[in-house]
Image 1 (spheres, each protein chain N blue to C red):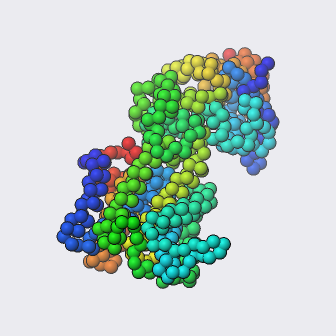
Image 2: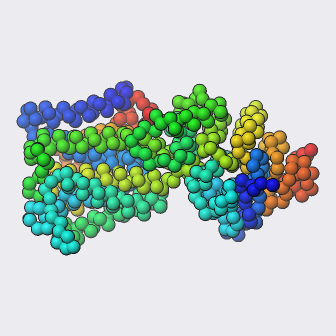
Image 3: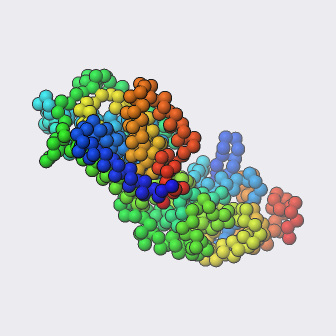
Length: 251
Length: 327
């Protein structure tokens, strides 16, 4: 088996007496969608923030493409191709849709300190940005002000910006949130296509989407991984049913 | 309602036309007033780069304005007394040459902005305001207690510094210098705000998490912006000192920082020509209301209150139809 794209080893993080993450180890393999599920407060957001670089773990190690990134900043991780989308859209709302996508291409290029050339005339940045908008169905809205986009369109733009990073792995925090049934279905199909570009670590509450998409699922409860396995294994897992799925009558 | 660029052009041409008319009518005081507007507008354009585009609310830009002023005062005072600035390890003499003074003012204020920025940009929000204010106050009290260069009384420079080929004591010629520099600074900042750097700076202001998530280090981008901003305001300080032929610690005072910020807010935060509009309105109010009452700041306060409450885009934003800046 090849080396995983992203590997967490023994990640622990406490806030005072609260052990938000306790000795978590998991991997993201090439080509897979690995879903991370668990009840509210299980420590999913804390884990995502540590992978993205917004929080530093107390203990443990994160490797990405064979490289130890535990000590790297968010920005450095992004330039390695770790593309994150947010649960609540984090966009430059005053900018146009295209400017947001160009910002992504610019950050990834690392050539931020260019002071004279108009950035929106630079084909090396605008072309990948337009390609990303086209892939996410936003091409017609390129010159729309981002603040005027609908919730679903903002979600699409989050993904488009992630695409401008030439991603080697996606880190997606509840992409289905607030999308509605039709939107979720479309996004489910789209994420499946996207996983051919790069593997996806997916935090999601929408169980239909998770069971439809995931190659593997890890279940978090009280800051620990209580199970990792295929969809069928997780559905059948007694501890998972008790901790998380029990009341919903899954099966 | 008029398009922002026409409004900008009108302001720019008015700043040029009024002193030219005053020159024809032999009204040197009006020319000096216009020169003051041009120089204060430069200081405001400098601050606006940090404040408007970068979202860095600095209440310490008097530090750079004062450093520029003292760069001029120190160099010119040594030149007029024929004493060198220092003799060992190597000789540095004073100078009465404007281009040299400007260069020194730009370099020293940029260096100061780099240091002050590196320390204060570790904080955000109200703490950033307080830290920049504190640095400004440190330099203010340092200038007051530095007897070699006049202490509290400041420094008088008897003859305005020279520029090759021009008679700088002629008001219209000195105005021309200030006007050309303002034009160059406006071009520079206009280019900057459309550049890759400008997009990154503006993006980091609007959503810092977004900037980081695409690989931009916001601290570095902001530090560079703060440094350029300080350098521009420092250049304005050197020109302002030459306008008055006098420097004093009041250039470092927090009131000066506040006034530069008022130009930006009155004219329109993040609007390229906002500081020019703001400086115009400020100087006109000071001139006409100051003639009526020495408490004219009360009326300034009312105008400012009106702008903040009812016209967030400032003069430029209210008079032009463009809803959002940076378009």
